[in-house]
Image (cartoon, rainbow, N blue to C red; front, side, top):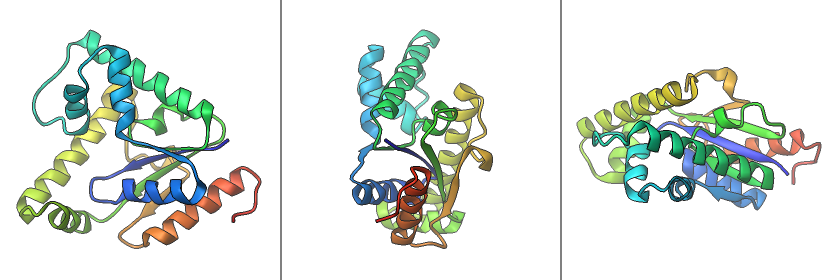
Length: 191
């Protein structure tokens, strides 16, 4: 019963890659639903927590008690998912929460800054200037989130088994690499 965590940069197509991997392996894909489940467990509003966690741009900060309850709930949800196995967890500090768990493959998905900017422009129809700001802010926020709440450097390559650059590798090849890695970890042949 394997688990894959995916940490990704905005515009790196990490979520899309996660969907392809989950489909190939017939694993469950978990993304934003973890936030909502954790928010319910913490007794905090889903929308506010999702906005804070995903963007961090509105200046809305829950008090320390609510934040800690949310972090405990996220940890509990991710650990429960890992126990169930056969899951791809996108984001939510899975690489930090499950760092010492057996049978977990940690993936980091990156792409060159300009490639990510072009993808954001195309996906959202915004200006290049706005996309550059969004990519920079997202990188800064995600790095700060991991450092602040998990004492982890988001871009530390030693946290990950694989770092995949989607600016240089297409998604089908990347999914095949991850599938081969997870099968190898489990001592199985890759289908």
